Image (cartoon, rainbow, N blue to C red; front, side, top):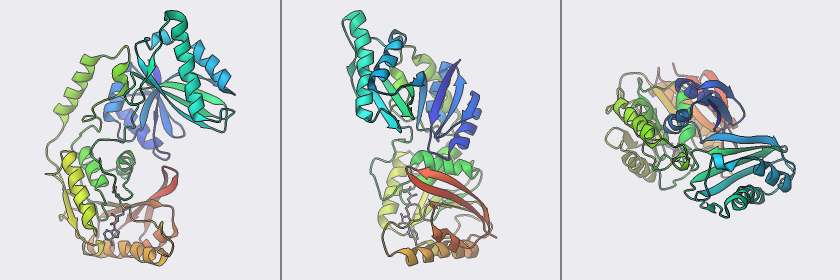
Amino acid sequence: MTRYFATCARGLEPVLAAELANLRAFDIAPGRGGVAFSGPLELVYRANLYLRTAVRVLRPVFEGVVRNPDELYDAVRTIDWDEHLTPDHTIAVDCNVKNSGLTHSQYAARRVKDGICDQFRDKYGRRPSVDTEFPGMGLNLHVSHDHAVLSLDSSWDSLHKRGYRPISTRAPLNEALAAGLLLQVGYDGTRPLWDPMCGSGTFAIEAAMIALHRPPGLTRRWFAFYGWMDFDKGHWASLREDARRRMRTTLEQPIGGSDVRDDAIYFAHENAKLAGLGHLLRFEKCDLRQSRPPTATLGQLICNPPYGERIGEEAELDELYATIGDVTANQWAGWDLAIFTVNNPHTRKVRRPVRSNHPFFNGSLNCKLWQYRVD
Ligand SMILES: C[S@@+](CC[C@H](N)C(=O)[O-])C[C@H]1O[C@@H](n2cnc3c(N)ncnc32)[C@H](O)[C@@H]1O
């Protein structure tokens, strides 16, 4: 049994903890920006394959106080790297330092690399080389208030990169965050789902993956644990096979979205096609005011409206949020409404009974998920 830490956007920790409970992880402990858990090695494979809200899955190998680059180097040298690496491995170190005597992330990363390489050179006269794109062993150093955690990173590239959004459009929602918000509102594919301001279609695509029981990691080409010395390729193949067998091919209820912009609908279609979901999702160009339920069955409305980056659009935004309230009351009665947005005063204009509001961070932006009753 090994202890792991899955990182996530702040606010998503309880959702990630629930996902880990579904994967039968042990000793689940939500923290700040992630969740600690225990399990056998194969749980790391399943975590990378199935977790919708995690950013990366880490396996800590050192935890302690380091006040400067030399103490960091010494700490790294206390680890027996033979347990994890060979001199033929390529390595890379990702580093995140805050409120610490270590001030430069890049220099801290270099000291970690030096500590590992010097240990190998002293023992074997050879040392691992660096590959920052596809390292045979990715390492993650997190230092806060002189408390350092050095981990083997089983994911390396962030798990939110599902591979269906190669073109960056205007203000797209992070895929892992979109999935987390859907799980937060209890979406499980048994109700219709519509995003009337769908942009590049992230909510609809993530909703379809949930509805089809499709693991987000299934189509990803590479995970850092492929380079681990104990990587069990056969078991990994059987986990993927098992996931494929359990996937559904059709949606129980319609999923889709609409947007006032032509380019948004174009990107939503393209992304859905890339995700292999083009034939299942509906996207339409239309203003929020003209949006109508896709079916008579009541379902979930979810959207991420503009929140105002331009000076002078305050009045416009007040009107837009008021329109969301009016249109949903008139056309979408009985549906559940969820609005995800930066914490802003415009949400007051929605004027529907608030069922709950939860804080979330979208990068450094302080956001909220508002859930309303639409009678
Ligand atoms: C922040 S973006 C949504 C991003 C989206 N969640 C994604 O992941 O790509 C807001 C979207 O609202 C759309 N929008 C703004 N006003 C609208 C209106 N009146 N009717 C429909 N869509 C509107 C914009 O075109 C934009 O695509």
